Image (cartoon, rainbow, N blue to C red):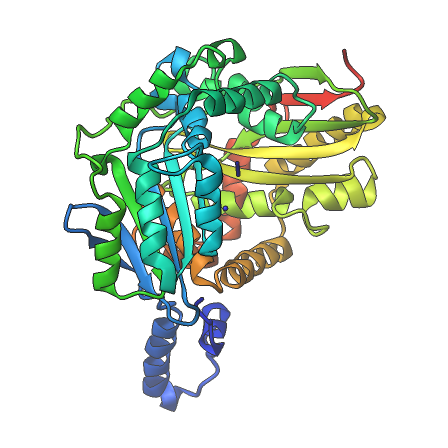
Length: 460
Protein backbone atom coordinates (compact mmCIF):
# COMPACT_ATOMS: atom_id res chain seq x y z
CA UNK A 1 0.00 0.00 0.00
CA UNK A 2 3.44 2.56 0.18
CA UNK A 3 5.54 1.79 -6.03
CA UNK A 4 15.37 3.46 -18.95
CA UNK A 5 17.31 6.41 -19.32
CA UNK A 6 20.94 5.42 -19.32
CA UNK A 7 22.64 8.24 -17.52
CA UNK A 8 26.00 8.76 -19.20
CA UNK A 9 29.12 10.23 -17.88
CA UNK A 10 27.60 13.70 -18.34
CA UNK A 11 25.85 13.18 -15.01
CA UNK A 12 29.19 13.49 -13.28
CA UNK A 13 28.99 17.18 -14.07
CA UNK A 14 25.96 17.50 -11.78
CA UNK A 15 28.22 17.24 -8.80
CA UNK A 16 31.26 18.95 -10.24
CA UNK A 17 32.62 22.29 -9.14
CA UNK A 18 34.14 24.93 -11.36
CA UNK A 19 37.91 25.14 -11.48
CA UNK A 20 38.91 28.67 -10.53
CA UNK A 21 42.71 28.45 -10.76
CA UNK A 22 43.03 29.89 -14.26
CA UNK A 23 45.36 32.82 -14.72
CA UNK A 24 44.05 36.38 -15.08
CA UNK A 25 44.95 36.53 -18.77
CA UNK A 26 42.67 33.53 -19.40
CA UNK A 27 39.67 35.05 -17.58
CA UNK A 28 37.64 35.47 -20.75
CA UNK A 29 38.08 31.82 -21.66
CA UNK A 30 37.25 30.89 -18.08
CA UNK A 31 33.94 32.77 -18.22
CA UNK A 32 32.93 30.82 -21.30
CA UNK A 33 33.78 27.54 -19.57
CA UNK A 34 31.69 28.56 -16.56
CA UNK A 35 28.68 29.20 -18.76
CA UNK A 36 29.14 25.85 -20.50
CA UNK A 37 29.61 23.97 -17.21
CA UNK A 38 26.46 25.50 -15.69
CA UNK A 39 24.53 24.46 -18.78
CA UNK A 40 25.86 20.90 -18.56
CA UNK A 41 24.71 20.61 -14.94
CA UNK A 42 21.14 20.54 -16.22
CA UNK A 43 19.95 16.97 -16.76
CA UNK A 44 18.04 16.70 -19.99
CA UNK A 45 15.32 14.10 -19.45
CA UNK A 46 13.15 15.42 -22.32
CA UNK A 47 10.00 15.26 -20.22
CA UNK A 48 7.12 17.16 -21.79
CA UNK A 49 3.74 18.32 -20.57
CA UNK A 50 0.99 17.37 -23.02
CA UNK A 51 -2.79 17.28 -23.26
CA UNK A 52 -4.89 14.55 -24.80
CA UNK A 53 -7.66 15.39 -27.23
CA UNK A 54 -10.11 15.11 -24.34
CA UNK A 55 -8.12 17.67 -22.39
CA UNK A 56 -6.39 15.31 -19.94
CA UNK A 57 -3.07 16.75 -18.77
CA UNK A 58 -0.10 14.39 -18.63
CA UNK A 59 3.69 14.25 -18.49
CA UNK A 60 5.36 12.30 -21.29
CA UNK A 61 8.86 11.02 -22.00
CA UNK A 62 10.02 8.76 -24.81
CA UNK A 63 12.52 6.02 -23.96
CA UNK A 64 13.19 3.28 -26.51
CA UNK A 65 15.98 1.58 -24.56
CA UNK A 66 13.51 -1.09 -23.38
CA UNK A 67 10.23 -2.11 -25.07
CA UNK A 68 8.05 -1.10 -22.11
CA UNK A 69 5.42 1.55 -21.40
CA UNK A 70 4.72 2.88 -17.90
CA UNK A 71 1.49 4.73 -17.13
CA UNK A 72 0.34 6.28 -13.87
CA UNK A 73 -3.05 7.93 -13.39
CA UNK A 74 -4.38 10.04 -10.55
CA UNK A 75 -7.96 11.00 -9.82
CA UNK A 76 -7.42 14.16 -7.80
CA UNK A 77 -9.33 15.16 -4.68
CA UNK A 78 -10.84 11.68 -4.43
CA UNK A 79 -8.97 10.22 -1.46
CA UNK A 80 -10.26 9.38 1.99
CA UNK A 81 -10.03 12.98 3.24
CA UNK A 82 -12.57 14.06 0.63
CA UNK A 83 -15.31 11.70 1.81
CA UNK A 84 -18.02 12.11 4.42
CA UNK A 85 -16.85 10.81 7.78
CA UNK A 86 -18.92 7.62 7.60
CA UNK A 87 -17.46 6.89 4.15
CA UNK A 88 -13.78 7.64 4.76
CA UNK A 89 -12.82 4.09 3.80
CA UNK A 90 -14.63 4.02 0.45
CA UNK A 91 -11.57 4.88 -1.72
CA UNK A 92 -9.47 2.18 -0.04
CA UNK A 93 -12.35 -0.28 -0.42
CA UNK A 94 -12.77 0.70 -4.07
CA UNK A 95 -9.05 0.30 -4.85
CA UNK A 96 -9.28 -3.37 -3.86
CA UNK A 97 -12.79 -4.20 -5.02
CA UNK A 98 -12.27 -2.81 -8.52
CA UNK A 99 -10.25 -5.89 -9.51
CA UNK A 100 -12.96 -8.34 -8.45
CA UNK A 101 -14.20 -8.77 -11.99
CA UNK A 102 -15.01 -6.23 -14.70
CA UNK A 103 -16.81 -6.26 -18.04
CA UNK A 104 -16.89 -9.82 -19.35
CA UNK A 105 -14.14 -10.97 -16.97
CA UNK A 106 -14.42 -12.63 -13.59
CA UNK A 107 -11.70 -11.75 -11.09
CA UNK A 108 -9.77 -14.92 -12.01
CA UNK A 109 -10.16 -14.29 -15.73
CA UNK A 110 -9.03 -10.68 -15.34
CA UNK A 111 -5.93 -11.75 -13.45
CA UNK A 112 -5.15 -14.33 -16.15
CA UNK A 113 -5.61 -11.81 -18.98
CA UNK A 114 -3.21 -9.37 -17.35
CA UNK A 115 -0.68 -12.12 -16.59
CA UNK A 116 -0.85 -13.60 -20.11
CA UNK A 117 0.40 -10.34 -21.63
CA UNK A 118 3.16 -9.97 -19.01
CA UNK A 119 1.68 -6.73 -17.73
CA UNK A 120 0.98 -5.31 -14.28
CA UNK A 121 -1.99 -3.17 -13.23
CA UNK A 122 -2.47 -1.90 -9.70
CA UNK A 123 -4.67 0.55 -7.84
CA UNK A 124 -4.16 2.25 -4.49
CA UNK A 125 -5.44 5.22 -2.58
CA UNK A 126 -4.25 7.71 0.00
CA UNK A 127 -5.83 10.59 1.87
CA UNK A 128 -5.64 12.82 -1.22
CA UNK A 129 -6.39 10.72 -4.30
CA UNK A 130 -6.91 7.38 -6.05
CA UNK A 131 -4.04 6.17 -8.26
CA UNK A 132 -3.69 3.47 -10.92
CA UNK A 133 -0.49 2.13 -12.46
CA UNK A 134 0.14 0.11 -15.61
CA UNK A 135 3.39 -1.37 -16.91
CA UNK A 136 3.16 -3.25 -20.18
CA UNK A 137 5.35 -4.46 -23.06
CA UNK A 138 4.95 -2.10 -26.02
CA UNK A 139 3.89 -4.90 -28.33
CA UNK A 140 0.76 -5.68 -26.25
CA UNK A 141 0.01 -2.13 -25.11
CA UNK A 142 -3.31 -1.96 -26.99
CA UNK A 143 -4.59 -5.03 -25.13
CA UNK A 144 -3.32 -3.73 -21.79
CA UNK A 145 -4.95 -0.34 -22.34
CA UNK A 146 -8.24 -2.04 -23.21
CA UNK A 147 -8.10 -4.00 -19.94
CA UNK A 148 -7.31 -0.85 -17.95
CA UNK A 149 -10.21 0.95 -19.61
CA UNK A 150 -12.55 -1.93 -18.75
CA UNK A 151 -11.44 -1.82 -15.11
CA UNK A 152 -12.21 1.90 -15.01
CA UNK A 153 -15.55 1.92 -16.78
CA UNK A 154 -17.15 -1.40 -15.94
CA UNK A 155 -16.22 -2.93 -12.55
CA UNK A 156 -18.66 -5.67 -11.51
CA UNK A 157 -18.57 -5.38 -7.70
CA UNK A 158 -19.96 -8.89 -7.28
CA UNK A 159 -21.42 -9.23 -3.79
CA UNK A 160 -19.56 -12.32 -2.56
CA UNK A 161 -16.20 -11.14 -3.87
CA UNK A 162 -16.62 -7.64 -2.44
CA UNK A 163 -17.67 -9.07 0.93
CA UNK A 164 -14.49 -11.15 1.08
CA UNK A 165 -12.40 -8.03 0.42
CA UNK A 166 -14.26 -6.10 3.10
CA UNK A 167 -13.83 -8.87 5.68
CA UNK A 168 -10.10 -9.15 5.03
CA UNK A 169 -9.63 -5.38 5.47
CA UNK A 170 -11.63 -5.39 8.70
CA UNK A 171 -9.51 -8.23 10.06
CA UNK A 172 -6.36 -6.31 9.23
CA UNK A 173 -7.59 -3.11 10.87
CA UNK A 174 -8.55 -4.90 14.07
CA UNK A 175 -5.08 -6.32 14.66
CA UNK A 176 -2.35 -3.69 14.80
CA UNK A 177 0.25 -6.39 15.43
CA UNK A 178 -0.11 -7.74 11.87
CA UNK A 179 1.81 -4.77 10.47
CA UNK A 180 2.69 -2.37 13.27
CA UNK A 181 4.77 -0.05 11.09
CA UNK A 182 1.90 0.46 8.65
CA UNK A 183 -0.62 0.80 11.47
CA UNK A 184 1.46 3.40 13.30
CA UNK A 185 2.25 5.43 10.20
CA UNK A 186 -1.10 5.32 8.42
CA UNK A 187 -3.57 5.27 11.27
CA UNK A 188 -2.28 5.95 14.78
CA UNK A 189 0.11 8.87 14.17
CA UNK A 190 -2.35 10.72 11.87
CA UNK A 191 -5.07 10.40 14.52
CA UNK A 192 -2.75 12.17 16.98
CA UNK A 193 -1.30 14.97 14.86
CA UNK A 194 -4.33 15.87 12.71
CA UNK A 195 -7.09 16.02 15.30
CA UNK A 196 -10.30 17.67 14.00
CA UNK A 197 -8.93 17.71 10.44
CA UNK A 198 -9.88 15.49 7.50
CA UNK A 199 -6.47 13.78 7.64
CA UNK A 200 -7.22 12.49 11.14
CA UNK A 201 -8.94 9.31 9.96
CA UNK A 202 -6.25 7.99 7.61
CA UNK A 203 -7.20 5.89 4.59
CA UNK A 204 -9.71 3.55 6.25
CA UNK A 205 -11.47 5.48 9.00
CA UNK A 206 -13.12 3.65 11.88
CA UNK A 207 -13.68 -0.09 11.68
CA UNK A 208 -17.27 0.46 12.84
CA UNK A 209 -17.94 2.61 9.77
CA UNK A 210 -15.98 0.45 7.36
CA UNK A 211 -18.04 -2.67 8.06
CA UNK A 212 -21.17 -0.73 7.07
CA UNK A 213 -19.92 0.19 3.58
CA UNK A 214 -21.91 -1.29 0.70
CA UNK A 215 -21.64 -1.91 -3.02
CA UNK A 216 -23.84 1.13 -3.52
CA UNK A 217 -21.16 3.22 -1.80
CA UNK A 218 -18.62 1.91 -4.30
CA UNK A 219 -20.90 2.71 -7.25
CA UNK A 220 -21.54 6.24 -5.99
CA UNK A 221 -17.81 6.77 -5.55
CA UNK A 222 -17.15 5.68 -9.14
CA UNK A 223 -19.91 7.94 -10.45
CA UNK A 224 -18.57 11.01 -8.66
CA UNK A 225 -14.79 10.64 -8.80
CA UNK A 226 -13.78 8.34 -11.70
CA UNK A 227 -14.23 11.06 -14.31
CA UNK A 228 -11.88 12.64 -16.83
CA UNK A 229 -12.12 16.09 -15.24
CA UNK A 230 -10.37 14.71 -12.15
CA UNK A 231 -7.65 12.85 -14.05
CA UNK A 232 -3.95 13.55 -14.59
CA UNK A 233 -1.33 11.09 -15.79
CA UNK A 234 2.28 10.26 -16.64
CA UNK A 235 3.19 8.20 -19.73
CA UNK A 236 6.84 7.17 -20.04
CA UNK A 237 8.49 4.61 -22.29
CA UNK A 238 8.69 3.15 -25.76
CA UNK A 239 6.07 5.15 -27.65
CA UNK A 240 5.82 8.33 -29.67
CA UNK A 241 4.20 11.55 -28.54
CA UNK A 242 1.21 11.04 -30.84
CA UNK A 243 0.82 7.45 -29.64
CA UNK A 244 0.88 8.61 -26.02
CA UNK A 245 -1.94 11.06 -26.68
CA UNK A 246 -3.91 8.29 -28.38
CA UNK A 247 -3.38 5.84 -25.51
CA UNK A 248 -4.42 8.36 -22.85
CA UNK A 249 -7.69 9.00 -24.65
CA UNK A 250 -8.23 5.26 -25.09
CA UNK A 251 -7.73 4.70 -21.35
CA UNK A 252 -10.59 7.10 -20.70
CA UNK A 253 -12.81 5.98 -23.55
CA UNK A 254 -16.45 6.07 -22.39
CA UNK A 255 -15.35 7.52 -19.05
CA UNK A 256 -17.58 10.54 -18.64
CA UNK A 257 -16.71 14.16 -18.16
CA UNK A 258 -18.33 15.41 -14.97
CA UNK A 259 -18.04 18.04 -12.31
CA UNK A 260 -14.48 18.37 -11.05
CA UNK A 261 -14.02 17.33 -7.43
CA UNK A 262 -13.21 20.46 -5.48
CA UNK A 263 -10.35 20.79 -3.04
CA UNK A 264 -11.98 22.36 0.00
CA UNK A 265 -9.59 20.93 2.61
CA UNK A 266 -7.58 23.51 4.56
CA UNK A 267 -3.83 23.36 5.08
CA UNK A 268 -2.77 22.22 8.54
CA UNK A 269 0.38 22.20 10.64
CA UNK A 270 0.72 18.86 12.48
CA UNK A 271 -0.12 19.28 16.15
CA UNK A 272 2.94 18.03 17.98
CA UNK A 273 2.99 17.46 21.74
CA UNK A 274 4.53 15.13 24.32
CA UNK A 275 1.70 12.55 24.31
CA UNK A 276 2.66 8.86 24.27
CA UNK A 277 0.12 6.18 23.37
CA UNK A 278 0.80 2.49 23.93
CA UNK A 279 -0.87 -0.46 22.19
CA UNK A 280 -0.27 -4.00 23.34
CA UNK A 281 1.09 -6.56 20.89
CA UNK A 282 2.33 -9.97 21.95
CA UNK A 283 6.02 -10.69 21.54
CA UNK A 284 9.44 -9.45 22.66
CA UNK A 285 9.73 -6.53 20.22
CA UNK A 286 8.21 -3.08 20.04
CA UNK A 287 7.68 -0.62 17.21
CA UNK A 288 7.99 3.06 18.11
CA UNK A 289 6.58 5.71 15.77
CA UNK A 290 6.96 9.46 16.17
CA UNK A 291 6.40 12.68 14.23
CA UNK A 292 8.50 15.80 13.66
CA UNK A 293 7.90 19.01 11.73
CA UNK A 294 8.87 19.23 8.07
CA UNK A 295 8.61 21.86 5.34
CA UNK A 296 6.05 21.50 2.56
CA UNK A 297 7.22 20.94 -1.06
CA UNK A 298 6.89 24.58 -2.12
CA UNK A 299 8.27 26.11 1.09
CA UNK A 300 11.57 27.98 0.89
CA UNK A 301 13.17 25.69 3.47
CA UNK A 302 12.07 22.38 1.96
CA UNK A 303 15.63 21.51 0.90
CA UNK A 304 17.02 22.33 4.34
CA UNK A 305 14.36 20.02 5.77
CA UNK A 306 15.40 17.32 3.29
CA UNK A 307 18.99 17.56 4.49
CA UNK A 308 17.87 17.32 8.14
CA UNK A 309 15.66 14.28 7.55
CA UNK A 310 18.50 12.59 5.65
CA UNK A 311 21.03 13.07 8.43
CA UNK A 312 18.54 12.21 11.15
CA UNK A 313 17.59 8.87 9.67
CA UNK A 314 16.62 8.74 6.01
CA UNK A 315 17.84 6.30 4.75
CA UNK A 316 18.73 3.79 7.50
CA UNK A 317 22.50 4.12 7.13
CA UNK A 318 24.96 4.10 10.03
CA UNK A 319 26.04 7.56 8.88
CA UNK A 320 22.69 8.94 10.11
CA UNK A 321 22.11 10.02 13.70
CA UNK A 322 19.45 7.42 14.46
CA UNK A 323 21.36 4.39 13.23
CA UNK A 324 24.79 5.71 14.20
CA UNK A 325 23.84 6.54 17.79
CA UNK A 326 20.75 4.51 18.72
CA UNK A 327 22.02 1.30 17.15
CA UNK A 328 25.73 1.67 16.49
CA UNK A 329 26.78 3.45 19.70
CA UNK A 330 24.07 2.63 22.26
CA UNK A 331 22.57 -0.61 20.92
CA UNK A 332 19.02 0.47 21.76
CA UNK A 333 17.34 -0.41 18.45
CA UNK A 334 17.42 -3.05 15.73
CA UNK A 335 16.63 -0.56 12.98
CA UNK A 336 15.28 2.94 12.56
CA UNK A 337 14.59 5.57 9.96
CA UNK A 338 12.74 8.78 9.15
CA UNK A 339 10.34 9.09 6.22
CA UNK A 340 9.24 12.45 4.83
CA UNK A 341 5.46 12.47 4.28
CA UNK A 342 4.12 15.06 1.83
CA UNK A 343 0.35 15.37 1.52
CA UNK A 344 -1.66 18.02 -0.33
CA UNK A 345 -2.25 20.05 2.82
CA UNK A 346 0.40 18.95 5.32
CA UNK A 347 3.94 17.63 5.56
CA UNK A 348 5.80 15.95 8.42
CA UNK A 349 8.62 13.56 9.23
CA UNK A 350 7.47 10.11 10.32
CA UNK A 351 10.03 8.22 12.40
CA UNK A 352 10.08 4.47 12.99
CA UNK A 353 12.23 2.63 15.55
CA UNK A 354 12.20 -1.13 16.13
CA UNK A 355 13.53 -2.31 19.45
CA UNK A 356 13.34 -4.74 22.35
CA UNK A 357 10.43 -4.21 24.74
CA UNK A 358 12.86 -3.56 27.59
CA UNK A 359 14.65 -0.77 25.70
CA UNK A 360 11.66 1.35 24.63
CA UNK A 361 12.12 4.04 27.28
CA UNK A 362 15.87 4.25 26.70
CA UNK A 363 15.39 4.52 22.93
CA UNK A 364 12.86 7.32 23.31
CA UNK A 365 15.06 9.24 25.75
CA UNK A 366 18.08 8.90 23.46
CA UNK A 367 16.06 10.03 20.45
CA UNK A 368 14.99 13.15 22.32
CA UNK A 369 18.64 13.89 23.05
CA UNK A 370 19.45 13.56 19.34
CA UNK A 371 16.67 16.00 18.45
CA UNK A 372 17.81 18.39 21.17
CA UNK A 373 21.37 18.40 19.85
CA UNK A 374 20.11 19.05 16.33
CA UNK A 375 17.99 21.95 17.59
CA UNK A 376 20.88 23.49 19.51
CA UNK A 377 23.80 22.78 17.16
CA UNK A 378 22.39 21.64 13.84
CA UNK A 379 24.54 19.38 11.69
CA UNK A 380 28.22 19.63 10.79
CA UNK A 381 29.80 20.75 7.52
CA UNK A 382 30.88 17.16 6.87
CA UNK A 383 27.34 15.91 7.41
CA UNK A 384 26.03 18.54 5.01
CA UNK A 385 28.47 17.40 2.32
CA UNK A 386 27.58 13.76 2.94
CA UNK A 387 23.83 14.46 2.77
CA UNK A 388 24.13 16.43 -0.47
CA UNK A 389 26.24 13.74 -2.08
CA UNK A 390 23.99 10.93 -0.90
CA UNK A 391 20.76 12.64 -2.03
CA UNK A 392 22.15 13.52 -5.45
CA UNK A 393 23.85 10.16 -6.04
CA UNK A 394 20.89 8.09 -4.85
CA UNK A 395 18.44 10.20 -6.87
CA UNK A 396 20.33 9.57 -10.10
CA UNK A 397 20.94 5.89 -9.36
CA UNK A 398 17.26 5.35 -8.56
CA UNK A 399 16.13 7.05 -11.77
CA UNK A 400 18.05 4.88 -14.23
CA UNK A 401 14.89 3.39 -15.77
CA UNK A 402 11.87 5.01 -17.39
CA UNK A 403 9.66 3.26 -14.84
CA UNK A 404 11.46 4.91 -11.91
CA UNK A 405 11.47 8.24 -13.75
CA UNK A 406 7.73 7.89 -14.31
CA UNK A 407 7.19 7.34 -10.58
CA UNK A 408 9.37 10.34 -9.70
CA UNK A 409 7.68 12.77 -12.08
CA UNK A 410 4.23 11.51 -11.14
CA UNK A 411 4.93 12.23 -7.47
CA UNK A 412 6.31 15.67 -8.34
CA UNK A 413 3.31 16.35 -10.58
CA UNK A 414 1.02 15.61 -7.64
CA UNK A 415 3.01 18.15 -5.61
CA UNK A 416 2.43 20.85 -8.19
CA UNK A 417 5.83 20.77 -9.84
CA UNK A 418 6.50 20.83 -13.57
CA UNK A 419 8.69 19.02 -16.08
CA UNK A 420 11.87 20.58 -14.63
CA UNK A 421 11.27 18.96 -11.23
CA UNK A 422 14.42 16.84 -11.27
CA UNK A 423 16.77 19.75 -11.91
CA UNK A 424 14.91 21.86 -9.37
CA UNK A 425 15.49 19.17 -6.76
CA UNK A 426 19.19 18.75 -7.52
CA UNK A 427 19.79 22.50 -7.66
CA UNK A 428 17.84 23.03 -4.45
CA UNK A 429 19.88 20.44 -2.58
CA UNK A 430 23.21 21.67 -3.98
CA UNK A 431 22.47 25.29 -3.02
CA UNK A 432 21.45 24.69 0.62
CA UNK A 433 23.81 26.32 3.12
CA UNK A 434 24.79 25.12 6.56
CA UNK A 435 23.23 28.22 8.12
CA UNK A 436 19.90 27.44 6.43
CA UNK A 437 19.96 23.91 7.79
CA UNK A 438 20.78 25.10 11.31
CA UNK A 439 18.00 27.69 11.08
CA UNK A 440 15.49 24.97 10.15
CA UNK A 441 16.63 22.89 13.15
CA UNK A 442 16.31 25.83 15.58
CA UNK A 443 12.86 26.84 14.38
CA UNK A 444 11.21 23.45 13.84
CA UNK A 445 12.68 20.78 16.11
CA UNK A 446 11.55 20.46 19.72
CA UNK A 447 12.54 17.45 21.81
CA UNK A 448 9.82 18.27 24.34
CA UNK A 449 6.99 18.06 21.79
CA UNK A 450 7.33 14.74 20.00
CA UNK A 451 4.24 12.50 19.94
CA UNK A 452 5.02 8.78 20.24
CA UNK A 453 3.08 5.62 19.45
CA UNK A 454 4.43 2.37 20.90
CA UNK A 455 3.12 -0.97 19.65
CA UNK A 456 4.64 -3.80 21.68
CA UNK A 457 4.55 -6.13 24.61
CA UNK A 458 5.44 -3.91 27.55
CA UNK A 459 2.02 -2.27 27.88
CA UNK A 460 -1.43 -3.82 28.00
